[in-house]
Length: 567
Image (cartoon, rainbow, N blue to C red; front, side):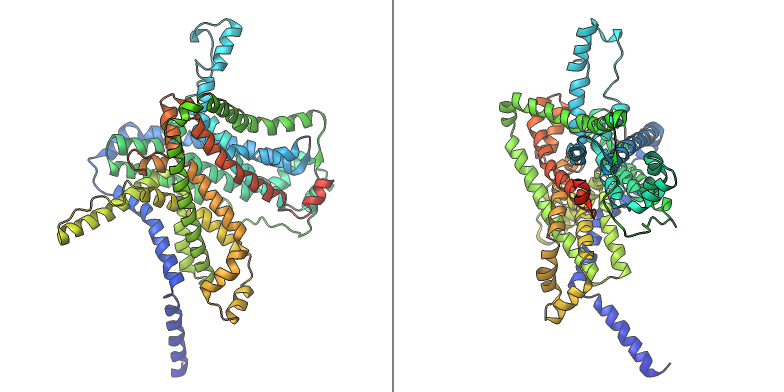
């Protein structure tokens, strides 16, 4: 090797290393590191001594937490799989009365928080509720001993409530997968003698498997994150255990140890999904797309299809929303006198702030990866996106430990230097709640914006650079106008999820500070659902618009959909 070649290699290495020292790359890495801090804090604090609380948990409640959490996940997973996939297939591939309405209506339960629907159905189905009271009047029963009625406040009740509001995740992704499938593959199945049902199980379902598995994974992660439903139904899951050990037993290390076990559940989910798809290909073998066949259903099949699509919407949205609306009218004056407007302002402020910051950071990170498509940068960004897979109760532990360490460090420095105590500057403040929201929902904004940026050809960047525009100018004048739709979608998704978020808000909020979610949880837990009905209805209202927009986007995503609709 000559001296000239060696010099060129050294010069190239220096350029590569120096290329990392720019604002976009350094900023992206720093943001990723900050987002990972709460997760690292959970791991660290779980290793510290804790008055032997772990042995006490193992001897008493750990087995119950594990078994109950597993049963809850299995029940909700199976329920959402059956409802989500079957309804997605019906509205995508069949023709029957009301199909166009069901296409978007089946997504409406996504706007209904699980804890709200749990409060409502408990009020309707409990012993003193209207359903059991009507049964006693009809059959002449006088006491509970004379008849049997399923207990709503139970593990089965929690599974039912979560299934009703979480099946849209599976429906959404399954329908998108069915809409993308080629007619040629389905026609080949029909030529081989398979009817619609056999074609569904042998062709359409295997092709949609990746989307279905991702949908179920999202459902299970949301199940692990749920706090309001399991708390109200007294179902002993890990999330409820973390809250109990931390706030009632006053043991942060014990809560972190439980959080670490729950984190292992999430890791198993993610790894299982990837392991199941190893070395398997799900590519479409043709680019020929026409309107989907639309099997015409008649007779009993038509009736069953209408019922299969109508019942989830009826019990997951129409009935709860109707009860909420009636309660809101009856208790309107009382609800308005419970600081409703203050709580609504708090929710809007926090959700808007978190959505704005999440979108800004998501744009910064996605563009940083586009500029420097390095492996290390990709790994750091993926780590920063882990927050959405982590239950809110786990993140809350990490956020408080992280911000508490920072507060103590600042306070110690000020005491030694200026003999002044700063106290807690971040912990127990709006900043803590906002930081928790950002860590948890950053993946939503980043994923949406990264996917949209990926559709812009790199030649656009080159053309802008040739006209003398730098990286920031290119982003501002070229990319941002082209990804406005993705930015709007990301901001709406983060905003709605922040409005509904309960476990993070309950643990991180300042003292005597309420959002609509915490207000509803507090009053409903005290059997005062009427006073909380207006706040609950407001949460649902904020979630409806994004749901309808998502449905319309899926309907227009397939080439030939207009012709198919006309047919």
